[in-house]
Image 1 (cartoon, rainbow, N blue to C red):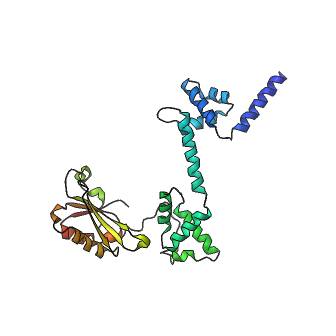
Image 2: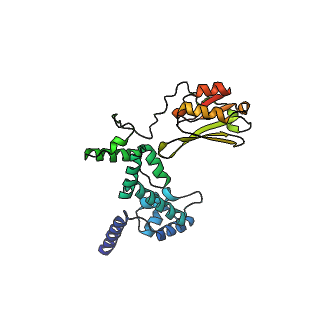
Image 3: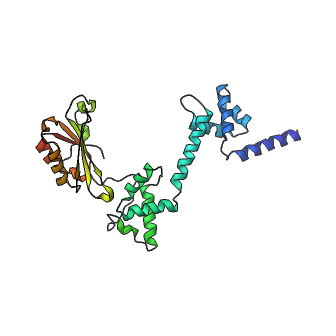
Length: 270
C-alpha cells in the first residue's frame, strides 16, 4: 500500500512538473494517433503523462477541419510563437527604422502599417510611447510629429481624422448594381502618395473593364486632384455613372467633380 501511494505521489509530481512545459512535436504525433483511434482526452493525458487541460487546450487551439494533425498543429504553434516574439521585441534596428521615418514626418500609424508589411508587428500606440519616453529624457523626436503642438489623447485602434469632408454620401447608399460589375461606367478613384509625401499619383479605375487612367499631381490638394480628373476624362465623360473615392482630403471637392462629370460620388468606409 505504501509503495502504491509513493508511486501515485511520484506520478502526480511528474504531471505537475510537465504542466507548464510546451508539447513537443513527437507528443503531437502521439495525440494525433490516439485521437484517430478514438481515445478520450483523459486517457490521452494519462498516456502522455500530461495534465488533461493541456490536451484540451492543444486540441482546441490546433485542431483543423481535417481533425487533429500533428504537422499542422506544430506549424500553428511555431507561427504563434514567431508572431508573439515579433510583437514583443523592440530591437535597436527597429528603433532606428522608426526614428528615420519619424524624421521624415511619417505618423506612428503609417510607420506601424509599413512595419507590418515587412512582418514586424509594432502598434502605433507603442511608437507613441517610444516618442514620449524620448521626450521625458530630453529628446526632440516628438517635434517631428505633424500634431506635435497638440495634446494627445489616449486612442484605441487606428484613429480616423479625415471624416471632416462635408456632404459626403456613404458607399452604403451606392446602387447595388455597382457591386455586380455588370455595367460600364462605375469608377473608383484614389491617390498614391510619393516618397516623403512629395507629390502623388491619381488613379481612376473602371470597375468592370479595369480600364485605368493615371496622372501625376504635384500637390495632393482637392484643386489639383479635380484639375487632374478633368484632364483625364476628356472625351469620355459620358462613360461615368458613379465614382467611389476614399476619405482623403484631396476629394473634398467632390461636389465639383459630380457637377463636371454629371456623376454620383460615393465615399468608401474609412
